[in-house]
Length: 79
Image 1 (tube, one colour):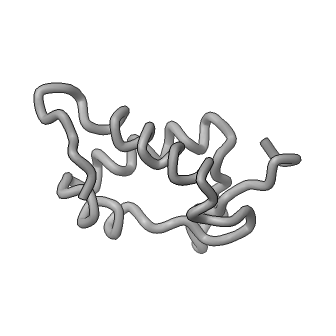
Image 2 (tube, one colour):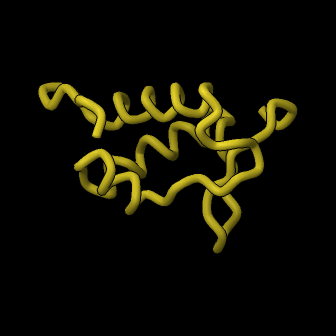
Image 3 (cartoon, helix red, strand yellow):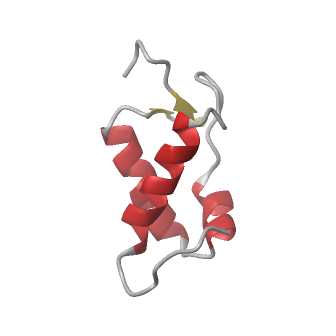
């Protein structure tokens, strides 16, 4: 579990860590991104906290939502 500064808002820290991991290629474009329940367990936070981070990544173009299927990593062309 990454070391989070619990005195600050957690979701921006989680979004930063997920961006780093995406940049490092942990999840390839087109692959399904982990769900918020799995991310909450990994980061030791509430599901709503990880949901905010995922929504931010979608707004930035890192992920696309397929209703009923989940979030998928976008390709550079899609960003």
